[in-house]
Structure formats: structure tokens, C-alpha cells
Length: 397
Image 1 (cartoon, helix red, strand yellow):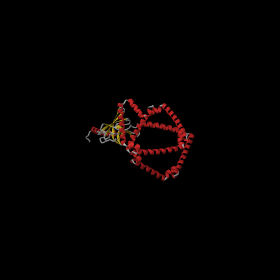
Image 2: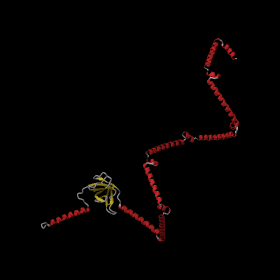
Image 3: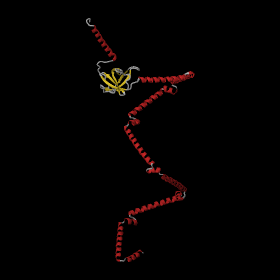
Image 4: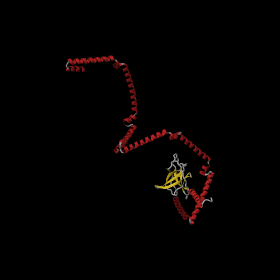
């Protein structure tokens, strides 16, 4: 060491100092040497307070850093540097957050569902707008001004003797209200009054519990499709039928609407009945005639009831009833005799019966008619018509 020159010693000391300074710079400035990893990009509405080398965190754990910030149109384009062992699933979101109200900004990545992984140089979407501290402070200042104006109004309203009296009245009213509430609470605790009975009555509690249990069973039955209401809710066929019925009802309503419009416009028979004034006049006249006819019928019925006229005598005259009864008896006897005669004729008895049933008599009569016809033809050929007329006249006489 004694042989080393002073210049050499100074040079070694300077080099060691430079190395130490470099290490401290890397430590304090967070400068990594030969950084290994990959880059992702994101566009945020505002990068205010975000600097180069700002931390990138996942679930509050620092995993990377901000490598660069540039303006990209109306947004800030931020380059994120992450180690290779940190994978960002697709659908993840980037949030610009603050370490405190006035602390440094950092990037928080909320991992998405995946399962795909965002590759190197990929894009991560912003999950939400960052909170602007200046805007928050401005709003807090506005709120402070509002509170100040409210306190000032309260001071003006409650200040002075009137204000003190108002405060005393408020305090007194509050005490009375509290006292009343305490009395009500005691009454309820004793089971008095409606609310007290509701609170203290165990039977009512059991009834409510049983009712709730019954409702629960009904709900389960409906859910299973049991009972009428359950079938209404669960039966698909009933739903289809209801749907079809609704469609048919709509069609029917449409048809009725169309018919009503036709009736309103006076089309068709019913439309003419509704709109034709002459038909109304005729109906009115018919009703008048019907009233007159009913009046006449009423008059006739009264005459018949009093025995006036032919029909009245027929209804009221007992002797006519007796004659009609005798006539009916005679008619019955006559019909019986005719029936007896018809039976005799049918059996061939008597002259008329023989005429009906004796076929030989029918043949003799037929032959006689033929003979008369032949004789008439012979006389017509031999005797002049005048002589035949004389003969016939003599015969007729």
C-alpha cells in the first residue's frame, strides 16, 4: 500500500464513491438495472398526480411501475411495466387512486374474470374515472360555505331573548315528548293497549306463527303445481289455452269493433235499424197500432167475459154448452154407425158391400156397358142422327 501513488489512491476513492452514489440513486429513484418484464398500455381520463415510476398495484400489493405517460388525443396514455410472473386476465380494469387525500397517485389493477390473459403490449381498459382532489376540495369548500350560512341563519333565528325562549320551548317540548314515550314504553311493556297486547300476547304470536307456516305451505304447494292456483301457475297447457283465448278475444274484439263501425256508419241491416229514422217512425206507428189493437182486444175480452156477442154467449151460455154436449153425443153415435157400416161394406154384406166386393157383378156391368157401346155404334151407322135423337129423346122421357 505504501508503494501506491497518491493519485491512484484518490482515483480508487473516487470510483468507490461513484459506485456508492450509483447504488443510492438506484435505491432512492427506483431505477432498475436490466429490468425484465413486459409492457401494457391503458388510456385514462386524467393522469394528474401520476408520475413516471409511480407504483402499479394489485390488491394493494406493488407489482410494477409506470414507465411513461404521453398525451393520446383527449386522454393520457400510460405505459405499465410488469414482471413476467404477473398475469393480467382479460376484462381487468385500471383505476388511478391516491395513497391518501394529499398523497401520491398510483395505478390499481382490478383483475377481471378471464380466462384469457392479456398479452404483452396489450391494452387494459380504464375501470373508472379518477377522483380529482381539487374538485373534492372545491366541493368541500362549497359545503363549508353552506354550513356557514346555515349556522348564521340559526344564530339569527335563535339569538336574543326570543331565541332563548324558542330554545326553552323546544327543550320543554322534547322533555314532554320523551316523558310520553317513556309512558308509552311502560304501557307496552305491561301488555296494555293494542301494541302492548301485540307485543305480550303469546297466543297472538302463535297464531301469527301458524298463519305464516300455513302461508309457507300454501306457497310450497303452489310452487309444486298443486291445487287450483298451483295448476294455474305451472300448467303450460293452460297457459297455451289462455294465450289462444286471449288471441281469439282480441280477434273477437277487432271483429266487434269493425261491426260497431259498420253499425255506426249505417251499413247492413242492424246499421239501418240503428240509423234509419223512417224505420223508427214506422216502428213508432206500429207500436201505436199495437197499443190500439191491445186496447181493442182488452175491450173484446171484457165483452166476452160479460157474455156479450156471439163469442161471449158461446163462453157464458150454459144451455149452448148442453146442446153442444148433446150434439157431440149424437156425433159419436153417428160415427159409431158409420164405422159399423164401413165394416159391413168391408166384409161384403148388404147391397153396397156386394157392389164393392162382388167381382162378377163388376164384370157383368162392364160387359153390359160394352154391349151398349156397340149398339150405339150400329145405330149411328144405319139411322140418321135426327132419328137417333128422336129415339133418345123418347127413351129419356
